[in-house]
Amino acid sequence: MELSFELGFLETAILAGVRLAAFLVVSPPFHLSSFPGPVKVALALGIAVAAVPRVQGSSQFAAGTLLGGDAAQFIGTLVVQAVVGLALGFIVRLVFAAVQAAGGLIDLFGGFELAQGYDPVSGSQGAVFSRFYYMAALALLFASDAHQLVISGAVRSFDAVPLGAGINLESLATLMSTGLSQLMVSAVQIAGPLIVVLFLADVGLGLLTRVAPALNAFALGFPLKIFITLALGSVAFLALPQVIASLSSRAFSAMTGVTA
Image 1 (spheres, rainbow, N blue to C red):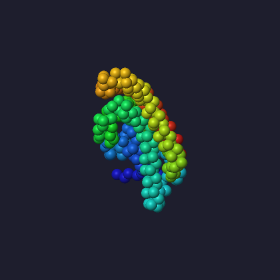
Image 2 (image 1 turned 180 degrees about the horizontal axis):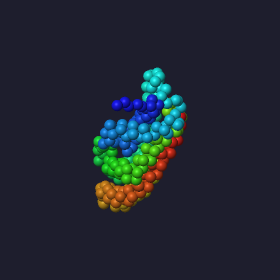
Image 3 (image 1 turned 135 degrees about the horizontal axis):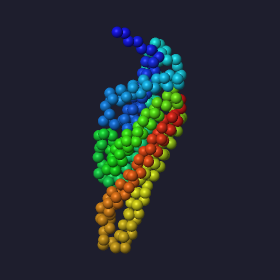
């Protein structure tokens, strides 16, 4: 039995698979250690094979010319595609980091910051609400099918940054700087109401201490702030599905906004 492969199809699938595999290594929710490496590679190759016709239509070189030509040029193109995939994955991860940053702000103002621990699943360190919000965000990504929007953005990146073209560093720097600013703004928007309540509780305890120093209001402040955080944190958690939908759309726009 003989198997024949079109050289152009194979070359395009390999290059697209390298970019998608690098993207899945960094981008949530696929970056978790619970996703085995072979699964990420198989998923990347499967998506790449399905996207070959779209990728070939936007490619800046004739399909099949690299595998049959200079090996150094082909390896260089592979490295460029890996860098592009890592950059796109980092942009997506930067967008969804707003949820974890919001949980970190709640931990800081609610008094949970001292209970930090290492999360082997996400590979990061955080306190109670930081890890809880992050895990909930990842679960909502799958429950709302937002992960499909992330994959769709990665596939459409071949239109913005075709094979054979490098990424525009100026455009990448602009997206990353904008992403950092939006990260802090989104984190404050998510945790803002609870932070205001906790701040007002501290102000009230301070005024109570000035009025009646013998009450030692700050000693009572720790359980009071923990109660407020647990009570209102669950209310803020109800808005998380809408937040994930908004962040998914923002990540999709960021990936398609990268230019060659």
